[in-house]
Amino acid sequence: MQPSEALGIAAQVAVTLAGFAGIVFRPDSVHRWSPLDKLRLQLLLTNSALPLAESLFGMLLLTFDPPPASIWRWCSGVSFSAQVLAFVYMRNPRRRSFTRADMQTVNKFLFYGIGSISTAAVALQAINFAVWNHFWPFFALIIVQILAALAQFVRMVLLAPHESSGP
Image (cartoon, rainbow, N blue to C red):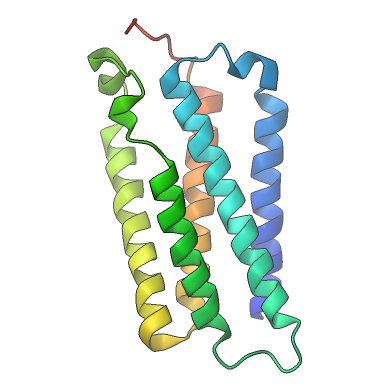
């Protein structure tokens, strides 16, 4: 499979996840959600929007004739920067007025599993930017983000809305 095909498919999947989130979770009801459910929706949308933007950026660079020799280095650099900005933008979850009961409902295996895999994928971006210049590390991050968004989407659909137990 050519990189352009893989990026096109990833962009379609990312748009689909974000679109389903908009259909399933009506915007007017989001304002009545608990802080934990709002965080889950934010993670879902972030993990859908970033792979879409990264895929489109990669496809843009592939349209150059001839494509730049360091195309995947540039893509990894932009992806690494976007991940750092997203991490900084996402406030510390402990400051979101979560109670101890709220924190006990978090699936620790899923939380730490996705966190560990995401950290490894972001580290691959730094290595790819500095040394390798290969497509697969860049695409691996996109896949990890889409899988994280999918996990959040499935959880939000299957789990009952979380009732916050107070401040």
